[in-house]
Image 1 (cartoon, rainbow, N blue to C red):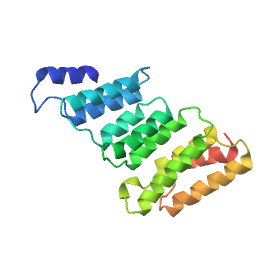
Image 2 (cartoon, rainbow, N blue to C red):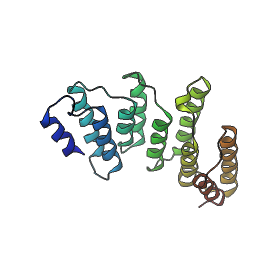
Image 3 (cartoon, helix red, strand yellow):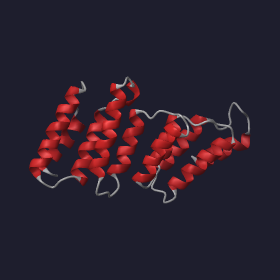
Image 4 (spheres, rainbow, N blue to C red):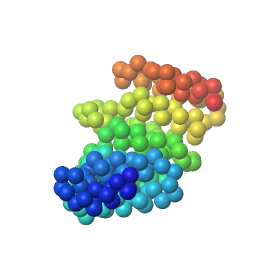
Length: 189
């Protein structure tokens, strides 16, 4: 992806040269890679965009957030999107933040997951259709609870029941992926 951006830069034609879509694709490729310096490289690409006069969008900052190695850094990008760049996060942005949280070891991961969910739901209730939690949100939270939550089966069952209830309240029909996560949560797997 980086070589393609370099090639587009070399061509130098404004209609072909790198644009926000090209950069977003490159940053998402980095985010999904296992490169040890992916977070720093994503930030360099963001600087390169800015220096080239290309303005980032919600996809850009979601990609940068996704590339982060720590939840603290991902969360900083979440706040920075709004505060510094004036870009409102979307459901996908929050879900990306939840995925970062799922993939790290943090003692307070479940508290942080519920704080993000609460923020999403509050924004949705204020009229933001772009932040409505979806099945990915609730499935990821179930997986966070499974990985980082209580080891007490009774607690896990209550949490699974609450998540299932919440999904139905939000008007979603649970799919196989969600049901699998809920069933695994119920039995403490």
